[in-house]
Image 1 (cartoon, rainbow, N blue to C red):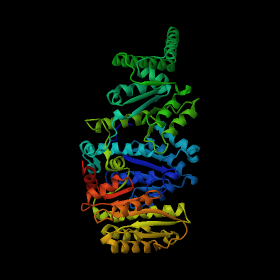
Image 2: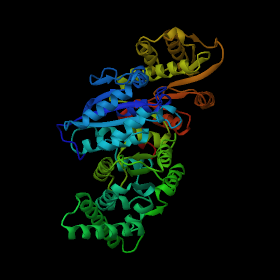
Image 3: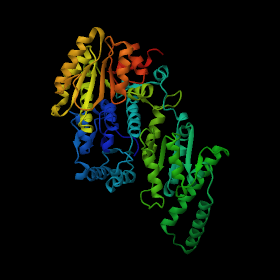
Image 4: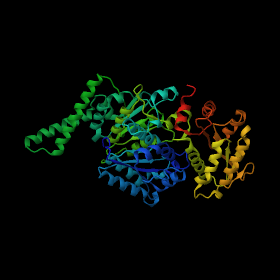
Length: 550
């Protein structure tokens, strides 16, 4: 595809398996939340969102007023057909660059439906990025956003530079700590060697490189006997046809392809001087894809560059699907890319935006917080936007809990402080048309010492909006859904606070709000405890929290 020109508009087809869009911390909602500033302020793409995914975004208050969002029908009503057709039409329009973000749960039977396979296959045919995990989507758009920053379009304040990352003690995605797998079907082995030649220095930085069968041999500068024999037979056949004075074009092309591949392997052998820089596995039909999948499962391989040929039947199709599904196992930071154009653009962007010291890929504030403390991030431009953002998150959390456990009472702990009070007031607007009466919610004021009265007032306001009740009058089973704490006010004593956080952590999410007036040491202690699920703060406060104490 090459790099987009400024006249090309981006079209994103966005959808997710049901389990990956439920609740505000679900991968789909995290992805959109983290990249909403880029989408709405810089890229401004057309967003075509499948029905259920669009409703999930709306329920979480995300992209609510974005003018270029188009809701497609639900999957059962032909929504995937509509999105696949947009992909086909976009491939014919040089003014459109389509990307597909389809977050797939390997345990979801819908991922095996023909319409899902057709959408992915059309991506491979057209060289369209098919991003099937949160990691793939987040890394792709972090690279694209970082390149936009590099070109002067703004947005750099949402990233952590290498020096800040190192000062904060946040591990980066440096190639030396990662593994990459290089796989190519027969018709695309030449393109794989060309890719390896073009990006040799970048690939060399990876700590582990894997390849299957013949591709691995070629990348190590060695020609498999079956290839040498096939090339020799083709040349003999070509010579015979030349004596007859009529050479079939397909035979000529096949011989030329073989010659180019042989020459590329020879150049690679000369470059390596006898070194084997790629660990070779079995060929795909003999289990090589399964071996790579096992490296993914063991967290030894993090990027699979798979040059797929969509025009041939594959005898080991089940093995290929096993590999793809292995990269989608929840909790794995793995990315699988399926075509040469996408892989090449990925490598170009990484090389252009890498940290000059360790080659690490660009890191957003959200990724830095996830890597440093294991928390989700609600970040805003200004502190004044925090109440609505947190209220949207809290409302989506309660609505999700009510849908998942309709017979249980959800308990929210809420502290005193100005932010907790303002968030309690903002919940009514966030509820929108939701039926608050259907939600069994009780609200407990956190023992806030000097702020106990304010905590009680905030709890009463919040309970009123949810048509809930103040503790201790629960009905049925009780599950903790959230704790909302203001880092800018005096907190309860640790002996009081942390047992409550542990109870919430086991079932829900503790949300800590911080602004420039927050006690950085107090907030960091809570984050370091591992009991906080969400940090809500203006982006500059986030940056300050990352480096405080280092």
